[in-house]
Length: 354
Ligand code: PMV
Image 1 (cartoon, rainbow, N blue to C red):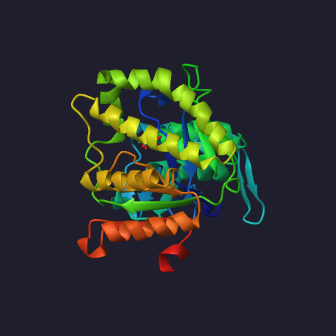
Image 2 (tube, helix red, strand yellow):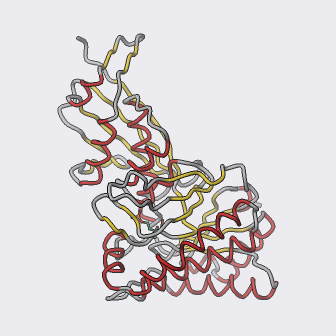
Image 3 (cartoon, rainbow, N blue to C red):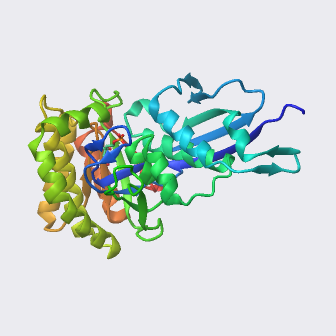
């Protein structure tokens, strides 16, 4: 009966939605009002790394985020822990002489340590990577055998967008029809190798934390925005089909057009909310103008842009040539000494140092 510790470690990148999730039809289960589609980033850049440990000497479940202890008492953590524990199986580690029976997991406590390899304060979506990683790594520790679809529906209960970070590449979160959320899962549309010419650049416009959390913003939009209803019922179903087709055929023109339109409509819904929500700022608007002018002068789309619940721009180039040109334009419009924008290269660091 020596004191033992058993550990598992995992890493999950964040994802960027190109068709946005905005609005819940069930807040407790986190069921969305529309399907969404995202691209998962390369794990070397914006990702969470989580180690989970279990030991009979731990008197309670505890968690540290970037080295600081955080509370696990929130419903979202509790839902993820409960759903994984429910599916836990026997674990045998002969080398260490550890044997955990299925029914033992209810009595054992876990310690969780998670790190983001990007500044959490930068206002970049970190809950998607964090909850996907937590669910995946707990599942590994507890020998959970469920498929990725099932794991995605557990991650969804931590943070909606987290369900899409269970897979790499292009991912669709199907809203589902059931009231219990059993069919509200993520599926992979194409793996990370499918369209690897794309270069994603994140321009950090502000490192301040966002003023309106996505949870309260979505609630207000669902309650007050007539545009949200129209978007969810009439616009998004069509857009999702077109986006799937664009991804399948690697059609950048169509992909970029849909991505920009959907970002703009999401922010229009925010503006249509009472009281209105402003996530983008003047710098965000200047970046949109820069891209729109360039796209118009070429007659074809050179860059796609998308903005989440904050002012930072996610810019997607079809190739390295356009990514390089974009960085030149950004540096020209926002000289580094102004200090209000620094480019953050994801997917191909070398372009920055060229
Ligand atoms: O998963 P949440 O609650 O952080 O919401 C994410 C919402 C957006 O990032 C704005 C859109 C999306 O689909 O990721």
